Length: 508
Image (tube, rainbow, N blue to C red; front, top):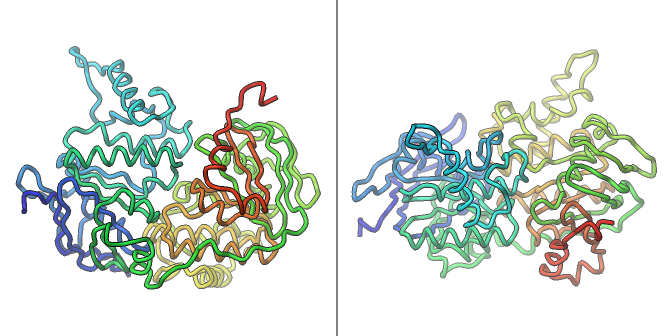
């Protein structure tokens, strides 16, 4: 029996200042088993895998990997790799200034007989990986020039370079992926399973858990709840065990009757989009959907002044405005929730209080002096209003769960009381309970007459929340789905529009 076990987790406890993240977690995983790890944000999932991988030292307990019959523990991430353990973390961790090929073989670049790096072999072998995962890229492409979703696929495919693999951990791997890439990932997981490799799969998309996993371990508030065969559970059962309550349709929010036009863009051109026009009304949720490289985020970054616009016009409440910088956008009462909250949205080493106030110190300062009482009061206000789970507002943001980090970013935007809010992938890496809270927050914003734009790679989400939907493909608006049409549309209908091919004739 013991020889079939690949991983033993024995009574792992992890304590941070003011927080007991793990409270004695124990479990075992067999060779060739795909084990789901589910729970709300803050349940301790990411902390557990860091302890397994040697990225964090447990306060108590240990994680042991079976290496040819001998159980060993990883003290560092380097140890983990030597023992055949690899992790694909929630946040894309990749050398963005290097090429795809360099990233694949970073740390073990092959050399020729003369001891010189064999670049020909690197790029030839990289192309094989690219072909295996059906990636439309060149091995010589620089990572930073690729869409975030493609960067995520590269981090996933990079694992296949290793030949000694015993355990692979995927932490929210599909958060930025469209359906075809999700299926590519699932094909790879099934290959790993056939090879006897154990897989830990962390996802808030419970339908994926049921599709690809053999067993599921449920965690809550840093504690082990239970492990079940996936065949014995359904989505509602998992949600109830995770959050302590059943959950009806989380997209069931009250939609407002849209008011007057608050935003209009006409014929916008940028690096990755062309001739984009649309409008947004007060009290409206406008959804944006498209496949990887469609240009959705780039358009919004252009409107927000974070990317250069070559031409086109922007109107706010009927008045033509010039937005050349983020400062201009904020002055025109536009708020933007970035796709990558950890890189672009947060100062991870700073407190919750500082992060919430970061964009709006000018509103609570006089003659260069910050009103410290207002700073503290605002932080406490949004901690309660947005339900940020933190011991206090002085807690370092990096110690918060992904869902609570997202709430901090949203609070930062709300401090400026914007009239137009752009949410780019607002629920990436967030559990079902936190999603419901964010959806209810969006509902309250449109009730106040705000205009909200939602970009999401998760089609059920953007369809479920939107009053209208813009579908983009290859940098163009491929279609607009009006409210009445949206009620009748199927996911495959939207995907068909999103797959529109634009050539020179079409573009004209």
